[in-house]
Image 1 (tube, rainbow, N blue to C red):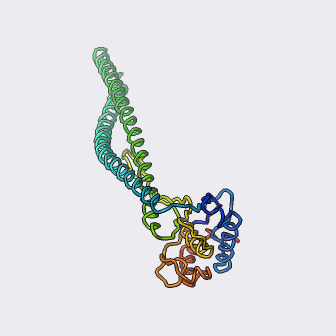
Image 2 (image 1 turned 90 degrees about the horizontal axis):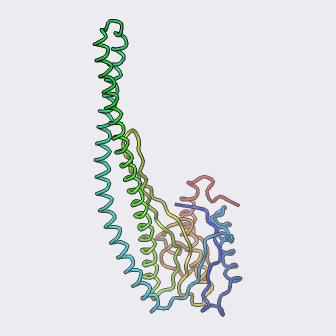
Image 3 (image 1 turned 180 degrees about the horizontal axis):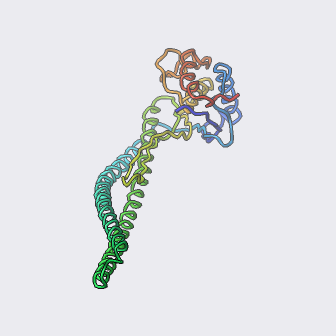
Length: 308
């Protein structure tokens, strides 16, 4: 999803203290912003101390492989936990659905019993003048007995309803835990992809999370389960900076474009080509294909990213 973003300088590895500083990185960011603004005719990002960080990291090959192995092991553990919760959610949902169905049936029975007693009471009251004392006492006793039964039935129903609501709250806690694990899973997948792609290759990455949430609520006596998907960007990471400022500028521009929602395009010389293009290292500039990609996502969303 396209989104106007704020960015800032985050961590710069001490390994680069002789080849890159905050002032140089800030200048690169402003140059990229100026180029984007001029060519697009609108802004898609700005520098802000409250923005998402750009981190220039030093990760050598052995460190990368160790990190990759650790993330892969953690991902397998998270995946196993998710699968266990998937089974638990399925079982709990089935049980909750059955309980809700039972509650609905009992509520209908209870409502019919209340309606029947009300009808009997109305008929008795309308005919009270024609009833003998014995008939009146019998009718009154029946009404009192049925009211007592209904009071107990309502009490049992309320207890069942309260128990069902407690189970539903526990189910929602499980769903929340499941959603949290999904976010962890997605974050690990992105890290693994980034590290896998950066081994033996200079590369950057716009990192975010694809978030799936599950909401449950009651509507017309039925439980509704609703899934929502959205993405949330977190930061930019640049791996293995080799001192080439022009190359860093091209990589940064590419990742900033990802950060605001622009996908790869398979066009030669384009900034958003998944393979770093030599012309972009020489002179970072949006091609017509890049501009078209920006316009397709930003111009289709009125007032989003159209700041000057």
